[in-house]
Image (cartoon, rainbow, N blue to C red; front, side, top):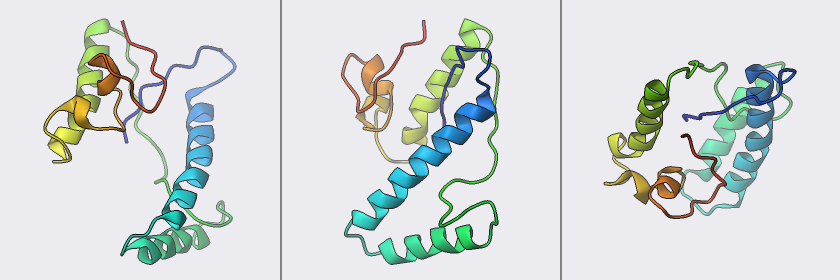
Length: 123
């Protein structure tokens, strides 16, 4: 997963944001997996529960890998480079033929549509 975030308050750090994001989305992801009718559902749930059991920091299941790779986006050019990288990942993975066709991407919003999440545009 690639994510572009900004901490607007000085007392909130990137590690704080990432910890809250992973904690919140882990619950949602696990519940979504539990509700789908998919042939690999039980295997995936078992794998997440196994990963959680083998990590004393985790109570039930583990959805996210440890750590992250932050890059400070200082220049407009670098911001746009990273935004394009994020948008074209779905094409590289073979999910879609155009960035705005991937429903989980902000590329839809940048193409003039409305995605499933609210997006604040990079200028």
